[in-house]
Length: 86
Image 1 (cartoon, rainbow, N blue to C red):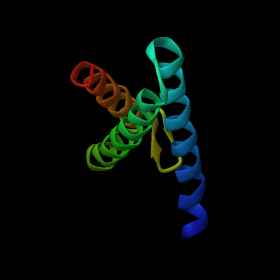
Image 2 (tube, rainbow, N blue to C red):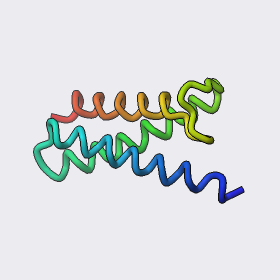
Image 3 (cartoon, helix red, strand yellow):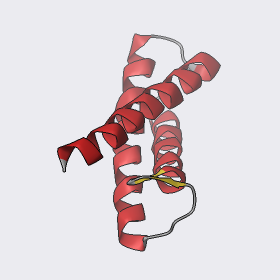
Image 4 (tube, one colour):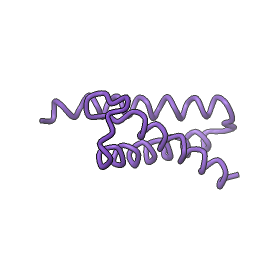
């Protein structure tokens, strides 16, 4: 069972890291911005993944990973963090 979940966790972590890095390259200023982006991407990705599990939508699902919902959650929370934190 753990062998089925581990690739999804690794891919999710890599996507969160990539999303935060892209946002930081675009509008990041310092290390604090990068860390906030990483935290918000991970939280949003997790919330989106849970939402995808509840909704059971097979749109761009890779194994157990709901890519659309999780990615939207990550970008949404990173955007909200950029609006709130100056």
